[in-house]
Amino acid sequence: MTNTLDGRAAFVSGGSRGIGRAIAIGLAAAGADVAINYSRDTAAAEDTVKEIEKLGQIGKAYQGNVDNFSECESMTSAAVGDLGEISILVNNAGIASRGSSVTDTDPNEIRKVIGVHVFGTHNLCHLLVPQMRGTDRGDVIMISSGATASLSGRGAPYNMAKSAQEAIAFTLAKEERPHGIRVNIVAPGLVETDMGKRLVRATRGVEDIRELDESSPFSRVCQPEDIADAVTFFCTQDGSYVTGQRLYVNGGGF
Image 1 (cartoon, rainbow, N blue to C red):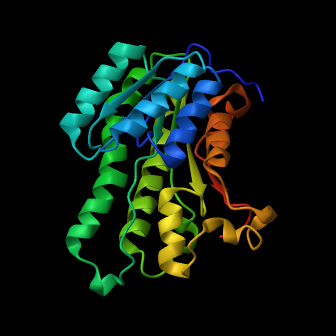
Image 2: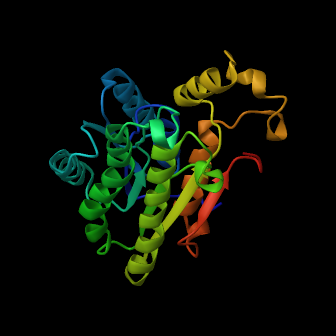
Image 3: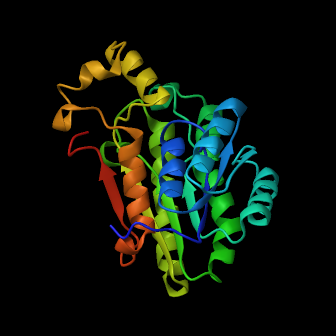
């Protein structure tokens, strides 16, 4: 891999923990300065920034809700002021749905989940993509989910939100290609994160997610760094001729 993002700056939503943290650190390891967004866990955000700085890059953290446009304006403005032009945007912030059937799902839950995944994604694209047009290269990555392949029952809010997020990506890829901006999707399966651990505990009664290693593809549960590696590939020169694509990172399983 042409392993350099030197001179570039990235904004990673939901970047304090789990997949977002791994992505932020992975981009920094490849040479990018990285701004992260977080909603609640200040200590985790500060720790992620420290890890970015250990790699010799500038790290910044901004608290705010991505579904709130005015908060997104403040965060992105601060990030551009601190890091310069943002040429990499990773829309990673997300929340899970409650696992109810369509008929039992509270409409307010749908609004909340779509607010984060869809309006949050649109808000950040609206604010950051136009200034990418003046850079040598721009990359927008959506962190979607293997849920878009299966659209399983009892997941309507999440299925709807991730499908809509992907629709933004495919549309944006067509619109921004003339400006040198690549737009791609990374869709993880089960990943060893706090959300993943809660999921297997609730759906399978498994207390330790690593109990699933033996039955998982390649005898291990997917790690956040696996997702980060895919994101970094898309943003480097090795991914320069790729846009409008969805990469499922699930070991070939679901």
